[in-house]
Length: 103
Image (cartoon, rainbow, N blue to C red; front, side):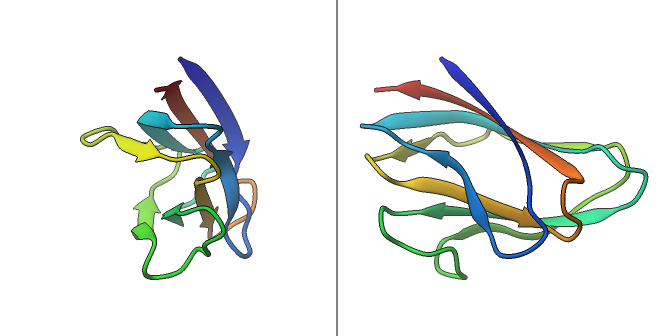
């Protein structure tokens, strides 16, 4: 199992995980490390695709100050080159932690 930690950007969604070969995402934690509420967007994007409304899994997810949201109810199976992309309303205010395993 692998762990990947990334701070989210405040602009366009950027890649926070890229699958090499096939992998399963077991959890995604979004942790707001600031004293203010922020919103996040999370996308599961096929290889060579773009983050948009067709690839969104969470939009405008509100994270209150010092709060963590955990995505774990369903496993995401990614092929080689597929990405998880995300952004938030205030740059560097949210840490995304992704747990994955190669399959």
